[in-house]
Image 1 (tube, helix red, strand yellow):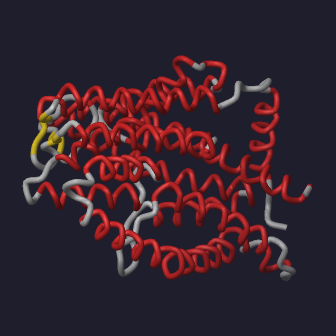
Image 2 (spheres, helix red, strand yellow; image 1 turned 90 degrees about the horizontal axis):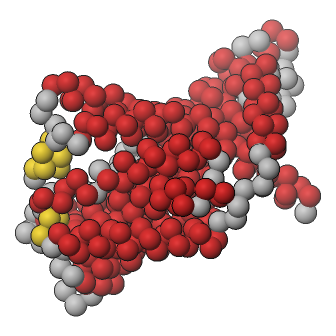
Image 3 (cartoon, rainbow, N blue to C red; image 1 turned 120 degrees about the horizontal axis):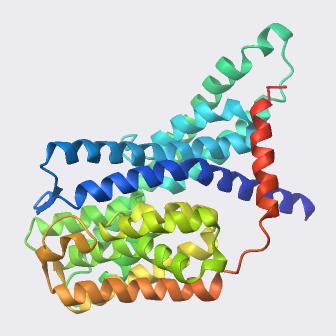
Length: 366
């Protein structure tokens, strides 16, 4: 039992470390993206930014968001195994956040968490190897990163990604059979899929499905999806605003950024909250997004562009219910968080953890 508790505490500490290092990239990316997209124009391809300066700002924001998941994975591995885990963790976090393999699977933040943990354990195992003194010096910069990236990378591509790709194809075919009389159920499913991995393969499956229907002139499923993409970050933002005893000062600052990301339909703004408290945050945002998606489908909301959030309101059919469904779904998530998320205890332990993390900078391969 004690061993299980230690494993759980180590994983929790690793996730918190990953989030701490990831947060600046989330904030930078979110602020720049929100500023640039706010000046954009809704088109059939999404929000189009035409101002040259704002285009550059948009690229900076995209760069911040591109670094977010590799940083999460890399510093999860770092927390578990020290500096030799950073490079393979970041490389495989990048792989998890980009299409790879025959099915071009992307697993997003959930995949990055898995590979970060796997890298941490493999590197810890490598550090137990008995090697000659001459080889020991090149272990952390050559042997451990190469071996770990190779082993965990192949396991991810050939064992983890393949069944996920098959599952996504199955989901698309199931969704395709649910049009018509199953509108509310379809809205529930699209909303839940949108929130469950916040930009990962399940979210992208919902996106691909709604885009395919848009090509056929069917816009209601896209309306449900675009309502749901805004709910997770808006819910986390509002929760930090009204339940301040449940969040750290760092979380409260991130809540401001998440609010603006929600307005422009960037679901990833909720990822740091989910990583830190997945068992409470994930159910709350899934339920809220499902409610929002169902309300959108039930009331015939149609989003005419492949983007979400309140920023596309001018190109939505059924504007009132688009707004109401988004707000009701958000408040459902906020209410669930209010009753399930406990108040914080004294933060002295957090300061001790920070000291431990900093002290790991001096760690070398044994």
